[in-house]
Image (cartoon, rainbow, N blue to C red; front, side):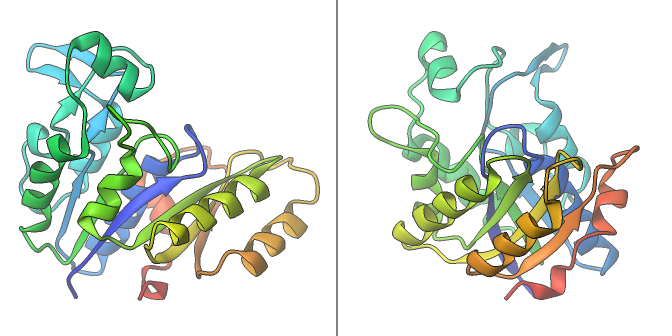
Length: 226
């Protein structure tokens, strides 16, 4: 097995990284080699070694292929704002071309299971008219969609699935990350998502008291991916 996917979400703060780390952990527990990249991250902390993003660090921790932080997250910004605005303030030209080489370097390592994680939702702006979704298109990767299950998630999920298809990419699977377990008619909402999203559900991640890659992995089924 040597497979690579672009992982996106229905919105920001829907648990993309939580699920991505869980998927990587599940792959490792199956004896697969793993690698990951987060091409751009905002909301980083200043450290003696430079800017560090907690999401990128979580991905790096689940990579069995040795990757430096710079390889995992080549473009980092301190303000917790949209990446294109952070880039503009920093005077950085944030384009698909500026991100491609670093992500291709990770893919070229040919790990058994590789994830490239976006930022926010599917149509996140970069510079000019570029979007982060254009990076997924340029890399020609199948997509895993993390659905943050809460009120309103059905429309967000279906619109994202439609956009992925319109962009010519395969939706390889989706994960229900239950952000609000008190969502009215939770089971009915999950059933509707399963009926309407044209890809297998790789698992339901409940609201966990202690969130870790290992605990999330227990709720995921990697073997449902093509």
